[in-house]
Amino acid sequence: QVQLQQSGPGLVRPSETLSLTCIVSGGSISRYYWGWIRQSPGKGLEWIGSIYSSGSTHYNPSLASRVTMSVDLSQNLFSLRLRSLTAADTAVYFCAREGTNYFFDFWDQGTLVTVSS
Amino acid sequence: DIVLTQSPGTLSLSPGESATLSCRTSQRVDNYLAWYQQKPGQAPRLLIYDATNRAAGIPARFSGSGSGTDFTLSISGLEPEDFAVYFCQQRSVWPRTFGPGTKVDLK
Image (cartoon, rainbow over all chains, first blue to last red; front, top):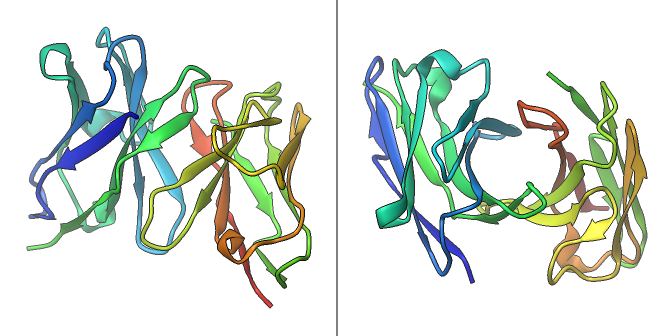
């Protein structure tokens, strides 16, 4: 059973950079897309971007200027960096796998990231 | 971007009743649409993929239909654990987009 474990800070100051890492266990990171999705308090789901195991990326155009994703096959993990944070970036951040059908079939439990000074 | 619209916003039902949730896309997505269930404090759970296929471990009371731009999630005989928010998502084109959700709550 694939499991995802996210790590990163719960509080980030405005204008700083958020760095999140998602470690994959129970399966290989190879030959899949891996995505980041966020959910503002009480709101819907916003796709941030997805990265293939080869390193190929697709980003949400609304965030693309501030987002960088990377993958580390040797450690079976993938990462998100989101720059120039504002209060509007406060959300629960999820990492997830796009399965063989390219929908998100495995998720982590999510991390609340608060942007505040 | 493809915009997904879900209706109704809230559906108030009793256990045992059936639910019909709608998702409409602003462009054709063929059958590349999924449904997710989310409960408070939890990650979304994939229910239906490619419009009609139940994901692993999903009970048969959940079914999906539709193609093109109009899709439906049906829940036949609501169980207490089915009261939750349901989102649709398309993967026909980048960027991936989600609908705003339908909340199924207890009447």
